[in-house]
Amino acid sequence: MSAAAQVRRARREDLPAIVEIEEATFSEAWTPETFASGLQRDDMVVLVATEGEVVAGYAVVVIGDGEAELANLAVSAARRGRGIGEALLGGTLEVLRDRGASCAYLAVRASNERAARLYRRHGFREIGTHAGYYARPREDALVLALEL
Image (tube, rainbow, N blue to C red; front, side):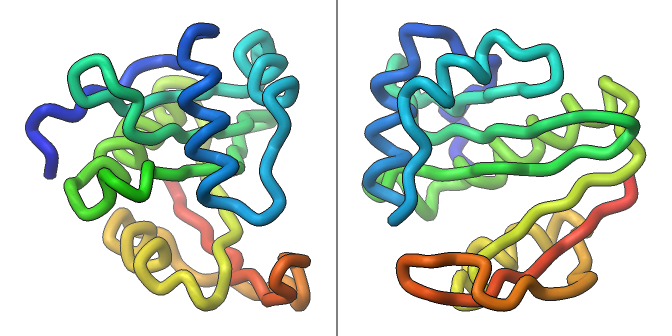
């Protein structure tokens, strides 16, 4: 794990870096407005992992009725393989436990073996698939769940 990575709640000034990572990572990127509104919502938590002053990655989780969805987690391509995803996921799970969530769900591209391994290391188990969930490129999603 990256000893220098720190996880904290995202702030408005983090949005340009979050959006840059988002657009470089996902073919169907969230808009800056979506992230900005997420910072204001009570049911959504946006975290960032920083190395020094640099935002290296982020995670978004939506919490409601005792359940949570890890909606997004991404690490800057230049900073992958340094434990930042581990730190973000650990921080996210801590927030979920603090907020009283009993289970968490997520969807991950079937071909994204690196991400799936990360989630499985943290106890997520495959509970199904969504056929054709991703549009560009067209691909199935694995649905993973974790009892907290």
